[in-house]
Image (cartoon, rainbow, N blue to C red):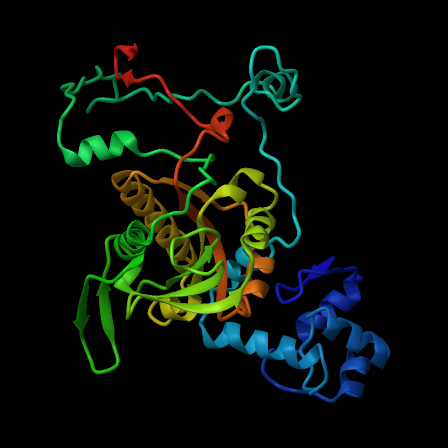
Length: 372
């Protein structure tokens, strides 16, 4: 099977055809008839290969023009070839994802309960991992116990309150001021360093590889005071929202479920945030670098943790998920998925009782003591 990241469509190929494809130039154009002769197939088969993205055709017709533009976009943004396959072959469209197991009560016989999941798949790897330490002479070394302390202070108390929320109060809106605070202190810019007239590095509340901050934020508003339900882009420069599409609150709830691949508990969230990456912003510096794509994903993860902490300080519930229909999200936002693509979705809202069965309420834990 041969597959192109441009289309994600598998195509059966013979060994001879695969060898012929490998011999064709990735930079020089050749006539259609010559390509057919060199590969030992007819012209329609050459066009079929081009429709699947295995060849690039210099044609103004679709889908050839669109695929050529996408391939040129990948080259212009300096993607690492292996990162291309990692990203584009793992994207979703129309997936309805169900979690591995659901929280249930003692009298519920949910086949997705934790015990049923363990019975079916076996126990997971241990939740705590230990290794045998070695001393200078290669002998087993004694463990060094560190001082135990429970520091107090605003930051530590905030970290204790950080959690994922899956239940929201749909009876009241999210007020505009805390919503604004959440955007500015999670995603906004708080400093600029101009290195050249064209190059500026940004200071945000989360770190970013090279201080480039390629992640963009698209709020999907269901119920925020003073804002019409719909899709927006968050302008970091102006701390403002640019409307993209208008929807009803009911439509936004349905869209939330569709974009989070069937995670119905997010329908009640007052706002979701689609995190996208302008890949060229990162790859401009780290061009064709094998680690650059990982850094983009780390940037989104950093932002999500900051969102959790800001939401906890504001008394809001927050969540983050990478289980998203990224292709559907890109189509809704009108972005091409190549120059800019969705990587994750997070969200917030007024906490409510709905979804409490899926809320993770841990018992406090102290090292060397256990749960208390």
